[in-house]
Image (cartoon, rainbow, N blue to C red; front, side, top):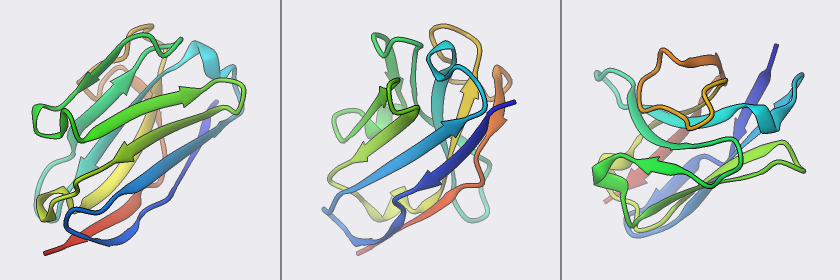
Length: 124
């Protein structure tokens, strides 16, 4: 079992930055790929970014490339999502997820564990 707790969400003006954290416990963190997903009001949950076990392989949703950076610190059992140049359309609840696939995935199915989510609101 893996427990995931997100933090770092909040209200920010357009153009601002936030860093989300996802603290993991209960298993060997370095053997899980990590993903970030988001769900905007009235929409389905959507892929944002993923990172493999060692952090050497990452993948991003096209609309966040160049603005968001996913990273991980296996010594701290924590994954991060640095979000810069935020836009109102980035407003959503952001979820982190953990899965056993080495390289991560853009789909939800390979992820076995999910956090409770953290709200990000970007004002115009």
